[in-house]
Length: 92
Image (cartoon, rainbow, N blue to C red; front, side):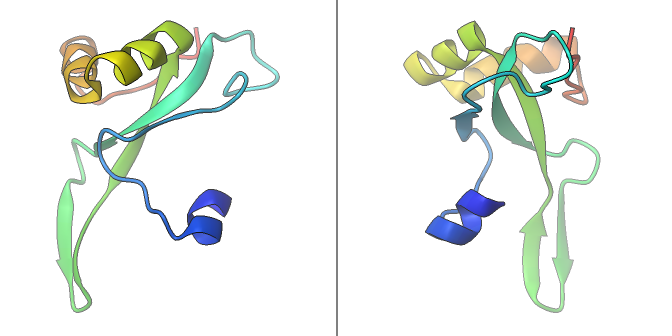
């Protein structure tokens, strides 16, 4: 949230960001980056203020993050979807 408020840049699907360390400091995890997908359950909605979409954070290991940068984040997330339809991040 600090990044978005400070820069005015907002996140969107297939954006990816390094966390510069583990996503959970008190857990031995290799998840060190995140990406975003449109939430598979909530999707998009319309309000009196316009249309919006719910984004879900997807945890990525360092090698997955490198692949997202070098190849194609959308393609990587399609592969992840085959193993987790709801994009649930498992810290293990």
